[in-house]
Length: 107
Image 1 (cartoon, rainbow, N blue to C red):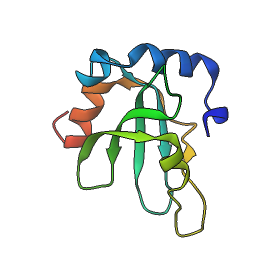
Image 2: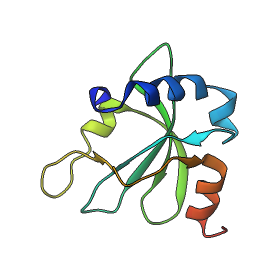
Image 3: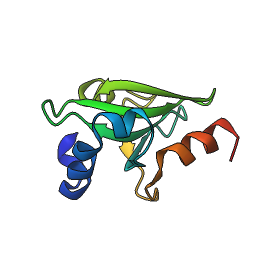
Image 4: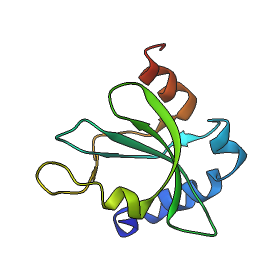
């Protein structure tokens, strides 16, 4: 799955790891989505010491949650058609705090 993320985005995600992602003082760089369930994962950061560990905003329709996941877990999350989440090519990165507020219905 990491192979599908452009190198420039991986660089930004690694730079966001830590306080920037914890405080939502960064950009949600990329969005993965499950087209059949409505689940979305907005990646905020990638652990520079472990390219599998991510911090993301997860939106399953009941409101967003900030979570630590792994790309491996994300890859094994299958929809009703047996497909793993795909990158939303229409998504344009946005400030994480603004995205979170928007998903909460406050923006």
